Amino acid sequence: MSTVEKKVLTNEEAMKVAAEVERLEAAVKQMKADLKTYVDQNGPLQAGDKIWNYSTTVSWDFDPQRLRELALNITVEGLNPWELLTLPAASIKKLGWDEAALLQYGNKKESKRFDSKKA
Amino acid sequence: MIYSYSRLSLYETCPYRFYIKYILGKSEPVTKPLALGKAVHKAIELKINGETEAEAIAAGLIEADFHPEVTGEEMQQLLSRAPMEVGETEVHFQLPLGSGISLQGYVDWIKKDQFKDWKSNWRPYGPNETWQLMLYAWALMKVRGLKQIRGALYFLRFRREEAYVYSLLEAVKARDWALRLAEEIELKISCLDSFSDMKSFLFPATPGSHCKHCPFVLDCYSY
Image (cartoon, rainbow over all chains, first blue to last red; front, side, top):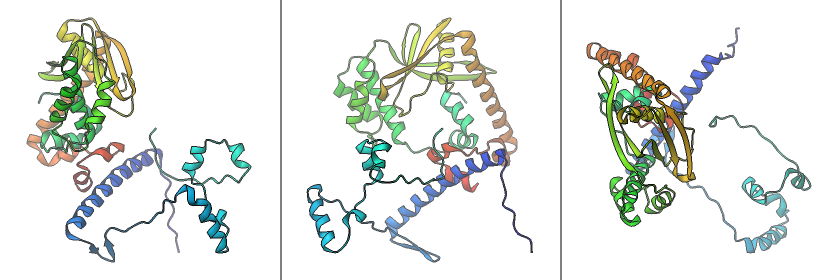
């Protein structure tokens, strides 16, 4: 049985694919905007095995003055509050501490994301 | 067709978008950057010519047809950063490019051998990163009989001026660029008259990062 070989693009092909991705992403964005307008006017749309509609995402904004109390009550529940309360990347950036200072409290984790950005 | 820098630049970026906009005559929605630019240009022009700030902003909002995303506050910010130098504003030019083709444009501000183009962009760029400034320099030198001219892009958000002094010899390069593109377009338009089914061959879509801002992306994707 033969296997399908994974194609490695030439530079010229890669340039064409990159440009095509830009067009497709822009087209998909426009199509989703058109679908959203349809749903706004007609309600949820069932297309095949999918339903296009709004979903609600929930987030909480805690009062900084009451975080101590929150941590205490998490402890009462038998959990370690510091495993649940994390510092998001934006807050760490706001702190302005360098890597050496941060390394005293934890380890650096790096992950790679594949995408394009302005040259 | 009378050509302008923006028409030629659009053709160079994507011949298919040029075809839809200028040959089929399909209108594009007025985006915020477009409306804001129009409003701010009007307001600066009026303020330089002696109107009060409030009157200039009001006239700018009217000029932008009260675009919902253009606010008086943002206009005031940009207006306060504009250089209020006395000079001629919104100067129209039209002159032959060659081969019976005409070029036209509007220059935001001119004084003797200097001109400026006000920009409300979020990203400043150098004077020769596009052909606009050099092409305007060539046109103004021709129209006003100058041997050299100082052209500047003035980025309002950053109070930053990017300037360059052009000689006629140098600026002719921009004329050559414009003439080459305009001749190419004229030739393609005459081909279209005989072979209307060749539109995608004559005016091909050139996908790229500019697709993000193209209102015709769906036509383009499915044609």
